Structures are given as C-alpha cells and as structure tokens.
Image (cartoon, rainbow, N blue to C red; front, side, top):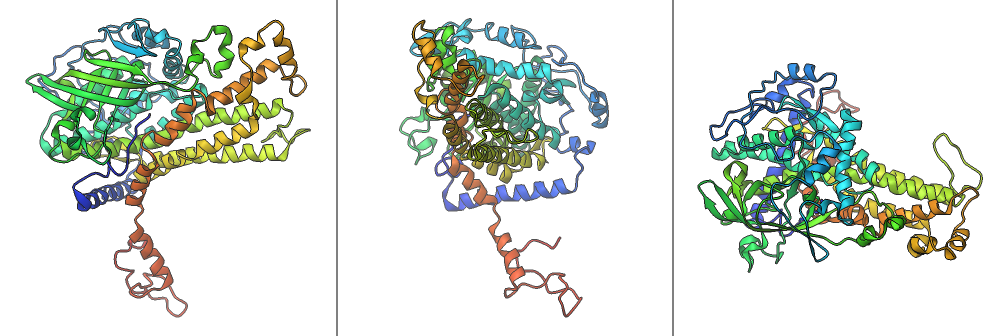
Length: 627
C-alpha cells in the first residue's frame, strides 16, 4: 500500500537526538530479545499460544459488550483443524460482541463479496473524475471495476486453494480467510507470503488486502502492550473487532498516511492542525475525528478502515494518537479516486479491451476526507497514548515491508510476458528442461535469467523475515524487523530493473502500437496485422496483447502498483535505511573483526592456538558471547 514515511520527519521525529537514540536502542533490544526467545522455543509448541496476554484462543468477557450471536466461521474445516485446537488447549467462549451482523450477511463466496459492495448500510460520498458515483453501483464503474475484481480474486483463491488462503483461527474456533488471520506461528507468517506471491501471479496488480492484514496483526500486539502499560481496555475491544471481521469474512483497509504538510514539523507544528487525522471531540460514548488520509489502497473495496497514526508523536500531541475502526460507509467520510496512468482506457468500449493490457485487474488509491466522523467507544483502540504511536508504526511496517513479496508474483507476470514476446519474435532460448531452441539469442536468455535472479531475491528476503518470526507478548507472531526492511529496500530497486529489462526485450512497439480501433478497421486492420507478424504461427493479435500487457505493467495503470508503490509503499527507501542502521549492530561487528585480527584488548576466547590448547583471554569488551 502507498504508505509514505519520510525518515527525517516521521518515524525518527522525537525530542532531539537523545530521543532518537532511545528509540534505536528500544528497537534493537526488542529484536535481540525476540531472536533469543525464538532460539529456545519450538514453533509447534502449544505453549506459544500461552504467551502473556493469554494467547489467541482465550476470551476475556467485557460487560460493555452486548451479546449478539455465537461466532461462525466462514469456511469449512480442513484436515488437522481439530488436532490443532486440541494441541493449543483452545478455549472458545460464547462470543460477546457490540457488532450487529452486517446488512449483507456472512461472506462465503466471491459472489457474496461482490454483492456486499452493493448493499451498504449508508449512502456513501464517492467521487471519480469529477463525478459523484452512486453507492449501489460505483463498484461497476469501468475505472473502479478492475480493482474490485482484484479484491474478489482473494475470495476466489480461498475457494480454490483453502489450504493456502484460509487459516484456522483460535479466536473464533474455525477457519477464516488468511487476510483476516492473526498469526499464531511462524508458519502462519510464511503462509501470508506464499499467498501474496500467488495472488500477484493471478492478478498482475495490487490486490489491496495486505494493509488490513498487517494492521490487524500489529494492532493485536500494540493494544495488548498499551493495556499492560496504562490499564486500558483496548485489547478486548480489538479482539471483538477481529472476531467480527473473521466471522463475517470482511475486508479491512488500513488508513495510516496523513497529508503531513510541512515535513520539517510534526502534527502540532502545522499551520493547519487537520493535516494529520486527529480527535476533535471526546464524548461519553465515543470520539470524533477530523482530517484526511492519502494514498489509501483499496479502501473503497473494503468494509472497514483501521485508522492508525503514521509517525512518532510527542507528549503534547495526544489528539493525534488515535487508532480506531470505521465502517467504510460511515457518515462523514468522502472518497476521491486517485488518477492512474492510462486509467480511462478501462472506460473505452469493450471491443477495445486489448489496449488496457490487463483489462481484468487493477489497483486503487483513494484520498479519504474525515469530516467530523463519530467513532463509538467499542471501536477505539488508541486514544491519546502518544508513547505507543511509534511502536504501532514500527510493528506495522515490519509486517508490511516483508508483505512486498507480492511484487515477486507480479514480477513473474512481467518476466513471463517478456519471455512470451521473445518467443513470438523467434528468439526465446527456452530454459529448464526445454533446452536451447533454434534461433535463440544468448543475450535474451541472459536478460531473462537476470530478471529471475532479481525477482527471487525479493521472495528470499521476505521469506527469511517471515521464517524468523518470533512471538510477541500478545501471543501472535511478527517477522524479523531487520530482514523485513531488507526485503522492502530490495523492492525499492529490483522491480525498476526488471521493468527496464522487460522494456528492452519487448521493443519499441509496446509504446508506439496503433490503437485497437485501428486494428479493427476494415481497411487498416489487415495491413496492420500483416506488418505485426512475428515468428511463424504467431497470431498478431496475441502479440499486440502481450505488448499492451508489458506497457500496462511498466508504464501504464498497473505500473502504479509495480513501480511507484514499490518505491514509496510502506515507506520510502530512506525509511528502511534508518531501521537497517538501527539494527545493524556495528559495534558487535567491530568486535568480531577486532577479535579475529588480534587487536589490543581482545583475547582468543576459547580458540585453540598452535602453541597451546588452553582457552584464551576474554573477547573484546562489548562483543557477543562465544557460541
């Protein structure tokens, strides 16, 4: 998602240099503790679910909650679900919830999801290209429909491959969509990545649900920590929200990025206080928020928004320390669709769908205006706790930065399109078990190999971060922070190089091809097709479809998700480098080097020398203990 964190004014901003040093120390200490904990625990140990906070399966009653109905899982059980429940010693109590059933009912199928977008409870204010759209039909608007289809594909995947796109939830005691799942093991974190790559392959675009998934997991931890520090009731509220989302199989969008205004100043230093979403009124039954969120991915296709602060806050900024869940159709919200390159091609006649490149799927970015939106108490998860704003941002970005393995899935499509065009040109060299074919050009093969090498690097970094996931005090698992930032930093570079190579392999026709209308002209069409001929047996229409797909991914509508989002989503490159610097442990690395070089003050530390089999003197001060 398009979350723009500026390192010099957001995550880093605090009260002077000392505050930044304390933040760095806290993050580094948390990572060391997590890695130490992971090394001493088995991932399949039921004790993980009994971590502080009661794990994921217990329920703490809250008298503020009105009992509505028992939770019901949207997906049927798979083999092993009962065994897992028994191993985890799960206790699912009768669900108490302040959430009435949604008007569209429980979503079980893709058709149910599409119907839910036409059955909003309230009239919505949605604008696209200067026009206000009707609430019941905006999802079928030609520019918006491809993004709806991309989200719908997440439900299709759950129906087709439930072992990949669903998970057993200890919270409601049944199988739920993985995008609504709170990770209860490192395997759960890894499975998110595998699902994300698959969806990238299936859609060739952003499928818009990763922000909500990562907000759910980060929120699960932070609400528990805030409660422990301040005695607040946020975790129970958040648990009830997650149970509602899981049971009714809802889509959650995240809302973190504020307009920010003057980047050299924080929220309280702005000339206009509304440049960051803030609480403008506190009532006995809830809060009122005002402001805007920008670059919001897929929110119009969601059922709920989870509002979060986007940066570190000072103690005198409690009105900006707000996290809450808001129905997408809540009164006071206005949505304005962002423009994307070539987006109106989707509005051209159906006969011209070839020119779209990928006419089935597309992304969506919105600007959301909050005009004094009321949020009832049971949907408020942070209210003034400025000391946890940065923690929420850091934990969210740890999840979200390794979520960018979705770009490896889109990269598979880019590589496939480039290879297909090479084959259509008669110069594809094959690969794997196919061997080298007649007419293959060595430089074509080398470029395809380079693209694949780069693409798999994204996946490798993301999977490494997820495999190294460790339990939090709330009982859920979060990825390794350093490796997650390494993954995202690769993503700020690699898709651009893959796109460059794809453009090289495609040739100039991807940018200069006549329109589909010209190809369909009775006189021009046959001539244009004649001169678009490729290798023997290649249909010229298939060739131009492939040209348009490469155009779509590298400079058209879906380049927003593949390139611009890769650069700025989940934080621009400088934001990742800040975290990498925090966690690099240069002092420890210096100690390793000094010890091996035999520098003054560094002993052999149990290393047997050529002249003695006795243990040496202690290692350099501050160096890690011997393994």
